[in-house]
Image (cartoon, rainbow, N blue to C red; front, side, top):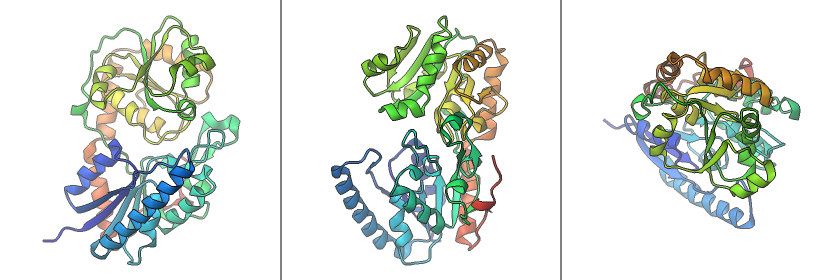
Length: 373
């Protein structure tokens, strides 16, 4: 029996893209295309690479679409446009991870912060048959960490007010066996993991605020893992205290051991979809403290602390509470992720939605009718 054929377009082979490729291959005949061109920082060279990449993707789509049953992609961005333009009326489903739902002008972050990607994303979103955001906050929410910038209202329903495309939340899934519970008794310490390759990313991950929190807690060691930018420039600009240690990026397979030693995991992002590293850290038994931003409260649930404002003293107080929390909280944090966001949930829900699309149904709630998260 012929399996339904899915064309899968993505920008880079991130962990969540690789997970979906593996899941979808269990049920469907998946033909994938990696666009591979990141134009976030822009240049003439990247513009030329973008043109070449679009030509390659257009040729691939034209060759594959004749036998395809469904189009699928991660993020509503330029790498989806050639799929929209193909001639056959094939359902298009998009997984939304965060960037494609945001406009953060102060950081120059989010697809809607771009003068050309924003309009293109609106057309892609309008042409899609189904949107699968990893969190309902990516459809409509209030980001209290951005209150001072005036960019508090966020989500595709805010940036594309009359969007009729139907949405269904499908969170990313996690394998507890890949992230074992570390030691229950741990020395006081605070950890944050983020791939930081630019000052914009440094700010987006809230590391400027983390430094001030650490300054208010000189007796507690803080580790920031994932630094790829010039540490000397960070030290010259922010003068972090002696209790902050910056560590270069580590292979993913080494992170479980790092999570398993940290007492508190601190996620102070100003923008985030469903934070993979936070979920992984909670599976490994870290007590979580995070900003009230997009998918972070979903991840933490009732197993940690959520802070509404980038106030270092208030955040330090929450971290102190987390450090003093009973050991049972470590198991509770792990259980919350394992029970709420198992990999099997994504498999079950994604397969059900894609099968419905293949049967001609259009499941979900129109984005314009989505309630405030």
